[in-house]
Image (cartoon, rainbow, N blue to C red; front, top):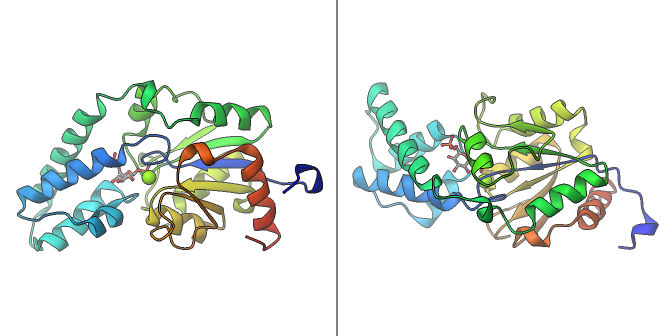
Amino acid sequence: MNSTLYTSSLQAVIFDLDGVLVDTARFHDQAWAELALGLGYVLTETDRHALKGRSRADSLEYLLEKAGWNDADPSQKSRWLQAKNARYLELVEALTPQDAAQGALVLLDQLKSQGIKTALGSASQNAAKVLQKIGLDSCFDTVVDGTRTTRSKPDPQVFWMAAQDLGYEPAHCAVVEDALAGVQAALAGGFLTIGLGDASVLLGAHRVVHQFSELSVQGLQAWHFAFNHNNT
Ligand code: B16
Ligand code: MG
């Protein structure tokens, strides 16, 4: 689409963290898989997709149901949650700014220079630490993470809070997400929804790209224009 032929009203882009700005989804996967194995359950590919984007507590409930541990008491659950998080944090320790998604810093700078606000919208309670490890901790106009939310994706709360922080309606914002739960949250919230990953998994996303470097300011504006004109 020729940029001279349309005017996009895209005001903000909200980025998911794990699996979008940095490949920490593999660390969550590994930590859950190890915990599951200890419970006598082998995590499947379907489970891995189902766990993505969900809060830590929701993820444990999912896993316990799959593993047939329906009678675990709250103190045991809390020990499992701590063990999973400790393992995840061990793996995260190795991250450096080189691990930020290729093109992330450039895109964030370009959005800023075009007057488009940026936000982080993550379910993670470890978002601040991960952002700091990859050198993106001062790059966003607002950060909404699992320390602020009370409802887990696919509930749109995290993205609504980000849009509210920035003072924009969801219809003027785009969300970039790697998880089906996150795509569902963004769709339910009324956002232009960009999936990052496999289109056969990220059902319903308005657009799907395979890698972060396929995102550009112009592309996002063109997709947003089409979204607002019911032409996605
Ligand atoms: P934590 P995102 C999500 O982050 C992950 O996708 C999900 O796998 C994880 O369980 C969730 O954060 C909670 O993370 O255990 O660090 O609080 O993708 O929404 O950025
Ligand atoms: Mg994610």
